Amino acid sequence: MYKIYFDKSGVFLNISNTRLDLDFVRSQFPAFKDPICKDWSFFENAGGSYVPQQVIKKLNEFMVSTKVQPYADYPMSKIAGQKMDQAIELFAKIINANNKEIIIGGSTSINLYVLSNALKYLIKPGDEIIVTEQDHEANISPWRRLTEVGAKIIEWKINPETAELEIDKLEHLINDRTKIVAVTHCSNIVGTVNDLKKISEIAHKKNAFVIGDGVSYAPHGFPDVKELGVDFYTFSLYKTYGPHLALLYGKEDILKSLPNQNHEFLENIYPYTINPGGPNHEELVSLIGIYDYMMDLYEHHFNIQNLSTREKINQINNLISIHEEEVANPILDYIFKREDLNLIGKNKIINKNRAPTISFTNRNKTSKEVSDILVNNKIATRNDNFYAWRCLESLGIDTNDGVVRISMVHYNNIEETNKIIDALDQIKF
Ligand SMILES: Cc1ncc(COP(=O)(O)O)c(C=O)c1O
Image 1 (cartoon, rainbow, N blue to C red):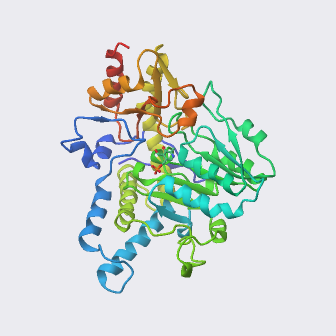
Image 2: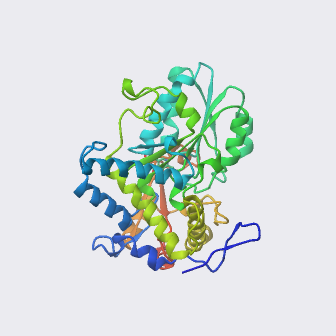
Image 3: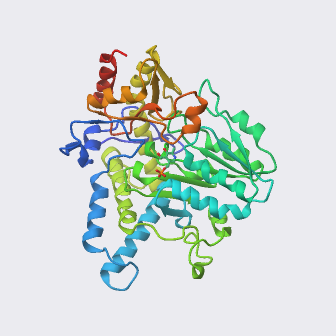
């Protein structure tokens, strides 16, 4: 048990001796003991994470006892409905939103497509939409499609040397015609964390909406959406230790004003009006397990109980970032220093300026060849463009072969860090 402390004004102090207990963390994920997974070092987390026992338990309980149509008056149905509502309430608390601001869909790609359909009624010919060159295609193509209603697409390009998006470029692109800025919180290739708070401030001066893609950010610590100031934010729950669903947050005032895309009689019952149908019930309920896991992490490491969910999440986030820096920085440093490897993005995580999502190419071998060698060393990774093909194209990387991506989360340990460095070291490229 660790302690947390407050300074005189009651602000949490980040105590350096409070460390993430990796044995505890890994004991929560059955995959680490599973015969198929246990001998592998899992470095494909940006593709989808392992799932803790708390999620599996909730999924199982729902399937056994309450897998009926929810919201009727018999007990199984009543409980099913209550649990579905509870999952939404808990996730609202986790990201500091309210219940009416949470929409659960099948994936981030679906969420953004559905959102773009809803927002298209606000777009008039000549209105401008800013999309980036760094984003996953999920947060680009739905907006590019709005040329159908006369939108003009403006591309916020990356700096080809650093692969980063620069804020001063945005300041030049944005103007009174800009209606939407669609930008990733963290790139799934470059790893850089973009300053969504600053971007929102800039966009709001022009009354433009900001659509933040949090898919590569949220697995490293659930964000506070109010703090970010974004109008919409989405992330994939299957990458934040849950089932294959995705969450879309939207500011209530905006959701209220969007057209009904659901059944006619649901008019005005936002947020149900946004999606043309409901989510997968059992998977929705299993999201309670993500909350339970986070709270178990909190209880295991801290001893102050009278904090809000969001305050507890902040504490967990701090622990996670310190640990992720420790396990990712040696790999970043190793790849950066190897002359034959070309690291994309920053070579060090400092204060959460970067996620431990590490992409690189090799001068002498294809990414597929490098990835195959790693896989032969029981390192679960892959090569691909990971649907951020515009980013790769701009960096001059073959979009078919793509990059090798090593992506870590808080359950990766230092032994795995050493294993990957050893594997790369033994390979003579
Ligand atoms: C940064 C980013 N955005 C969006 C997506 C799309 O998410 P989904 O698979 O839930 O559609 C991904 C998927 O890998 C991603 O990495």
